[in-house]
Length: 236
Image (cartoon, rainbow, N blue to C red; front, side, top):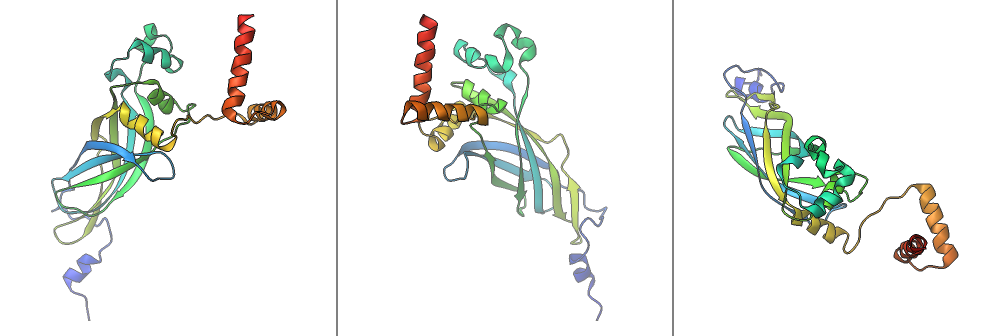
């Protein structure tokens, strides 16, 4: 028995063209941000609102690049001093302060019609050799202006039931002012009272030997002993 036209349509190859159905236009907005309390690494979640003006969405394979719009906020003298390693002397910031890449993440959005609100998880690092982490550590209050740049593929149903695919235009963007306190609350949650420090292997080996030779009980005591010794040398 030959399958019906409806059955043939429902099993059609994805991407089959149906000129009668225009690709949906998606818009994006970030509505909120918070800390994911239980994750393998420090993670922020952004509440992402996605709206469609067309056919029901079957799914969206979404890629999001997040950038820090460093020029869009002021910096007090304390922050200027903490960020000098990134941008140089504040007198040169007119040329050295620039939009900074933070991270890129991928997310599969399930089916929806009209609009949907999803959590966009963003794993973070406290490695202060990473420029974005150094920036977040350097600012002390206020908001960090973020730019979200979206790309990926929309899968949607045509009027005759065909599964179709369309690219997300590269002009799809959103902005969000991330409160500095949210970043600091996340790091305080995952690293309470401490900061993560990465050392080169040979430097760590020398530090470990120093700790063992001096019979010091912790890494904090080891660093403190070295700093006290350096301070005495400078005073002399």
